[in-house]
Image 1 (tube, rainbow, N blue to C red):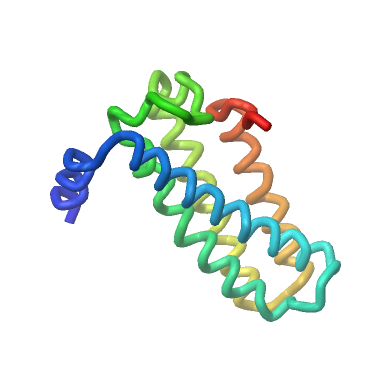
Image 2 (image 1 turned 135 degrees about the horizontal axis):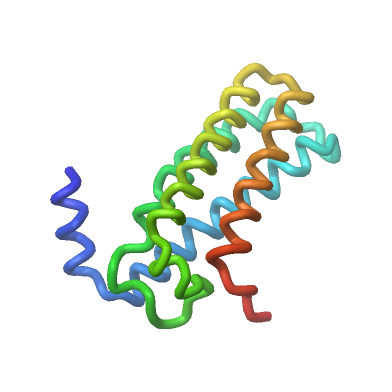
Length: 139
């Protein structure tokens, strides 16, 4: 499976890899936005938290693979530091995976307090990675 994935990278245009990465990250942002509204009690869709959290955790497992060698060019918000410090980036991404997995477990229990706490931990992990490895998006 890993070799098949590597072959796919080799056949893809770097610009397409970047577009794919951006689409996945945008989807993660959408799930975080929906979960934030639930966690803050602003919408009555607490039962939806489980689906959003599962999807977010699933997407988060892809993050490390979204930055293959050769995709460090073009229109991207990734800082050069990401590739120069890739081992620490991978650690930060794995920490975020753990946080999103914990959020998915909290959502499965349908415990709003636990969801709120776990959501906060996910937000911290996302911000930590963005602070180190993401340029501020252009408006």
